[in-house]
Length: 266
Length: 365
Image 1 (cartoon, each protein chain N blue to C red):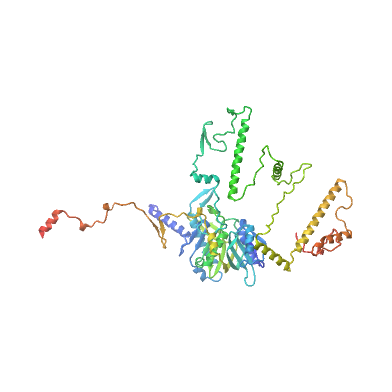
Image 2: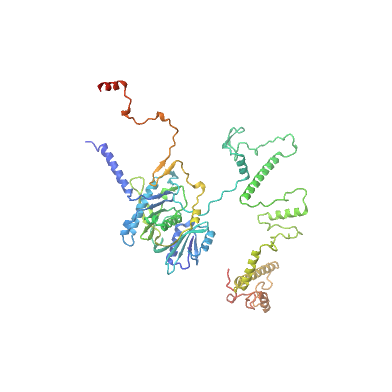
């Protein structure tokens, strides 16, 4: 669901249009401008999501304090979960890159680079939003020749660089092809501004998995912090009298003659 | 002289393979984390090369992207593949990243009557074979469906049973019995659904024809039958002297005379607040628009009637619909009619309306 704010400037509108083009069959781009503030009042956003049955939204606006603002949000059961505000610094749109494009509706490859994505809590949420936004429907099989484009997010010096490349599979000597990338599509430099994360209980509710999908716990296995897997083996009752222990040669029972010989020598 | 020996050839082949592998291998400090179900890869290496580069590291970003993509593609190409219609298709594993759900988990449905009974008695569903041996045709046929094993419907001869009436139609009896079974099944299914959604089925009391039904019951049954069409009774014709049914609208419900004191107090205070506030309760724009729409509709209906009458009589009589420069009494009448509203439209307009002369709200479509 892509909504335009009150003073959306050309950059922001073009970003929304590009994202809509990338997610063609599943996106809804609203044409009129809406005067709402996503961080203060969320009732209108929830109303829109109920009407259009979308749970992800992007809201673009522009004012003096926050130029070229993009708000991305995720909803659960038509209530807002997370909202993240990003500022657009540099933007090159789909139209400006003169290379060939890929057909719409293809499932993209998503790559996140940079250790910031795992260390900072905000960045972790920031990671889950584009995954949700850009991954297509979950499929069981994928045609290997149909992997067309790559969306690459890099976190560097407080900024997030978003680039999209077209994938060219070249021949290498063996079965796996050699990759070459060609710049295609929108490239945006983003700065993280504000975030509003979900309340804990709503987040817990949203992460609840139905019993059928929960991974089945295997019995008698446990894991260490270092990653070692321990297994438990249950043995039947053993007869300890017939146990094979270490051979103590010194304690072996000597034959009787040898003892008498020693005694005689003494 | 011998050509290159076997060992030399083998060594050369190994070297070639190593070179080829080198082309597609990428070395990284930390391994990437792959989530192949989502076609996702996360690179945790700190981007030192990028930091050293200048303000806009496009080329370095591209190189980094290329390396990461190569690693992901290597992983993908190792998945089990199969050939589907001349394309190589890899089977993806389940996505491992846990993302929040979009809608809440569906609630478990309540058990149906049979399921409750079976649970009580400890009855488990018996596993049945797909095919059954059919004696008549001498082959294995399916248990139900097209060309099933014991098909009643295709019998060309039915013997009249001992105690039955010889003039009865046994074929029709069979078809009727089947219809009754299907209807009973459908009824039970609807009942189970109603129980699951905690609603009630519409009652069919008095709708089944017995010989002894009173006039009122018959009347009610007839009304229900009239409304049970696809257009909810809109195009059902009435008999020549039949009157329209009275009292078939919604029943009005009234509050009890004395009951909830808190609610009554709240309502009365709310009323006082509305009366005190300066804001008018009447939305002038909506009221004027409604009035204008009604007038439009009236005129359109009149025009249609006139045109129909004119056509029937074979020619136009007069101008029919709009008349230019209507008599001033029309405007006067209009004003009287609008006396109830706050603002009135300018008098003397007649039936012709000009766009700029509205005093009410803007015309909204």
